[in-house]
Amino acid sequence: MKILAPLAMALLSVASCHNKGPVSKSNAATDSTSAYKDYHTQSNADSVQMNHLSLDIAVSFEKKQISGRADWSIENKTGAPELHLDDYGLHIDSVAVDGKKTSFSLDAPVPILGNRLRIPITTQSKLVSIWYATSDSARALQWLTPEQTASKKQPFLYTQDECINARSWVPCADGPGIRFTYDARVRVPQGLIALMSAENPQAPNDSGVYHFKMENPVPAYLLALAVGDISFRPIDPRSGVYAEPSIIDKARYEFADVGKMISTAESLYGPYRWGRYDVLVAPPGFPMGGMENPRLTFCTPTVIAGDRSLVNLIAHELAHSWSGNLVTNATWDDIWMNEGFTVYIERRITEALTDKSYVDMLWELGYQDLEDEVARLGKTSPDTWLKLNMKGRNPDDCLSDIPYEKGAAFLWLIERNVGRERFDAFLKKYFSEHAFHSITTEAFLKYLRANLILGDTALEKKLDIHAWVYEPGIPANCPRADSARFRMVNLERSRFLNGSPAAQLQTGSWTTYEWLHFLRNMPENISLGQMKALDGQFHFTQSGNSEIADLWYAMSVQHRYTEAYPAMEKFLSHVGRQKFLEPVYGALMETGQQEVAKRLYDQYRQNYHPLTQAILDKMIRK
Image 1: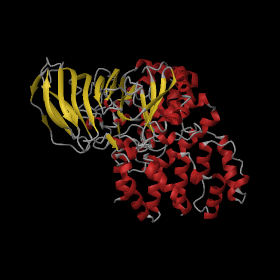
Image 2: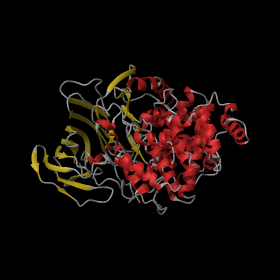
Image 3: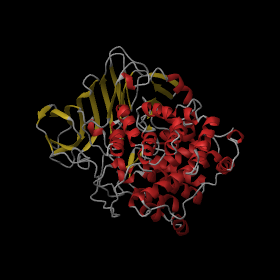
Image 4: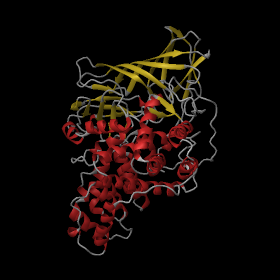
C-alpha cells in the first residue's frame, strides 16, 4: 500500500513492552525461527491448517451484498475440536463439514476484531463449507453508484482488505502470517466484468459468471475483487491496464513503462513469480494511492497526470511483488518488513529507470516526511519504533510514515555500509529463500546477522540495529541524501521571496518533486500577492498534477487565497484519496473555516470510501 505522506490520524501511545506471546506456527508457510502471536486474528490457524479457499459467490448491486459459499480445505493434525474463523458482521446461514450440516456459534463481537466463528470438527475433517452473506457493516466493500464512477454509466464494486477487512466479506483466518491458495466462481450482472487478485479475464462475457484461480499462497488481506464496466489494454505480453472505458486510453499511456519496471526489478531481486502484472485504475473514490493485490494492483486515478510524472507509485506497488506479497510481515507489528522494504526497492527501481539525482529527491522528501511524523508522534513515542506493538489497537494505525520511511532508511544505511552489490545479492537470496513465507522482525534480524553481517562486530556497531528497531525517533546514523537539484530549487525560492518576478524563475526542467520541495518550504508569512503571482505564472490552481494541486489547495486555505476555492471544491468532489483529503479538510478546520469544511464534507462524503469517512468524521464532525 502506498501512502506517500504523513497520515493525519492520531496513533495511540502505548507502553514500550513487546510481549511476543505464544508461538504461532501459522499456515504452511510462516518462518518458524521466531515465536510470535498475531493478536488481530481470532482464528486458530496455529492449530488447524487452512490450505485452500473455494468461493462461489454472487454480487448484487441492488442489495449491496455479496452472498454465497466459502469452502475451506483443512488439515486438523492437532486434533482441535473446533475450527475458528474471523467474522466481521457476516450473516452466517448454515455450515457443513465434509458435506454434512452441522451446528456453529459466534462469540460476542470484540471491538476492532469482530466475531469468532466456531465450527465443530474432528481430526478426519477435510472440508468446511459456510453459506453466508455480507452486511451493511462490511468495511472492505465500496459500492458505487454510476454517478460515483468516472464513466457515470454503471455501478462499481471494489474491495480493500488491508489490514483486517477481509473478514467482513469472507469468513477466513485473517492474519498476514496465514497463507492459502484460492479459486472462485463469481456471478455479476450481465454487461459487467469481475476481476480478482488471480488469473483474470480481459473482456466481459455473456453469462456474467467468471472463474478465478490463485495458485500461490497468499494471506487474506491480499484477497481482492472488483466488479464494474471495465476495459483492458495490453502493455506487453505479461502486463496491462484495466480502467473504466472513459479513461482507459489515458491510463494505457500513463503506464507504458510498467514492463520496463518489471524487468528492472527482476534484474535486482530475482524473477517475478506471479505470472502477469496488471494494474486496475479504480474509480475516483479509491482511498489510497495503490493496493498491491497480487497480479492486479489497484491504484488511484490521481496518478494519471498526462505526463507519466506520478507513476513512481506503480514502482512501489510492483515492488510489493517481492516485499509484502512474496515475503510477508508475520504480524502487523512487523509492517516495516513490508513497507520499508518496498519503499527501498521502489527507489532502486526508479533510480535504474531515471538517475541518482532524481532518486535523491525522493530520499530527501522521505526524510522530511519522517521528521514530520516523528514530531507529530513524539520523539520518545514507541510508535516511532520499527517493531511496533499493535496489541489491542486497530492495525490500520500502523500505517504511518515510520514503517515506510524509517524502514527504508534503515535498509539504505545497510546498503551504504556493505556496498550495493553485496546488499543486492543478500536481498535476492533473502527473497528466494523466504518466497511465499511470512517472517517476523526477529527472524529477519537473525537472517541478516547470519548472512550479511557474519560476525563483523565493527559493522554491527556501525549499524546500531537496536536503535533502529527497538528505540524511538530518528537514529543518529540515519542517512540523508545530498540533493543538488533541491539546492537549485532553494535558490529559486529565495530569489522569488527576495523580489524576483515569478516569470524569471528557472523552472523549465523541474519535475513534480522539485515543485513539491519548492512549495513545501515556502514561509508561513508568504503574502496573498506572492500567492497570486505564483498562480498567475505557474497555474497551480488548475494543475492536473494531483500532488501539486493538493499541496497548493492546502496552502491556499492556510493563506485564505480564495481564488483557488472553486477548483479546490471540484477537487474534493471527485478525489477520494485519503492522503489528499486530510490536508485540505484539516487546513480548513485549523484556520477557523470549519463551516466551509462541514459544508463540503457533507456534500461529498458519499463519494469517499468508508475507511476514509471514518477518519474524516472524527476530524470534521467532532
